[in-house]
Length: 125
Length: 136
Figure (cartoon, rainbow over the protein chains, first blue to last red):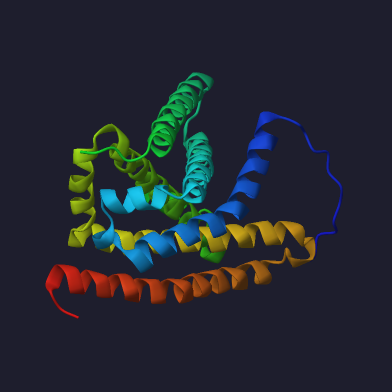
């Protein structure tokens, strides 16, 4: 049996927007993450990566912008994914609220740490 | 025994077969990638906050255990991406929403993920042998 296409009402709730974000950021992350992994993990490799290598890469503004985009989209996509998973198991309003606050704080703090590092750049040890 | 087995099986097989394997693998690969991503943001941030710690972090990533984990991580990233695109594509085409198409599509996703992963796994595996076992 095939399902006939039908129009459905699209709510403008937070959850609807979060769902849309997952879809669009997911499509964007396929090239963004795959290129990053191909270059850094497969072609360059962890044995060739050190402070000098990071400094050299971040000397190009384009790579800093690339890394900021990676940080913003991967971590938001991942943390919202974790929120979806936890919502499958966490019953009760209060527990969900506590988890939401913890995830929001963790997301903001770690995103800020990463952003400061990318903008601040490599410092001499 | 049966009292233990029934709820356990009930949890492990929700609807079973390809649809659930696709869902479960999507979830596990997503959570695994997020775990690494969190650590990776923090270890990279040491280049600004504690530059002398960065080399220690990289040394850890150069260990055999972490390099094997890195090869697994690449599979997670590939499968999660390919399967995510499958989900998005199926949403656009309601005429594909048949049980058989959904089942077959899981095997295509798994096959394509492994196909993309094999050359990457080969190159990373070779780097592991060259650097950690002096071979090549």
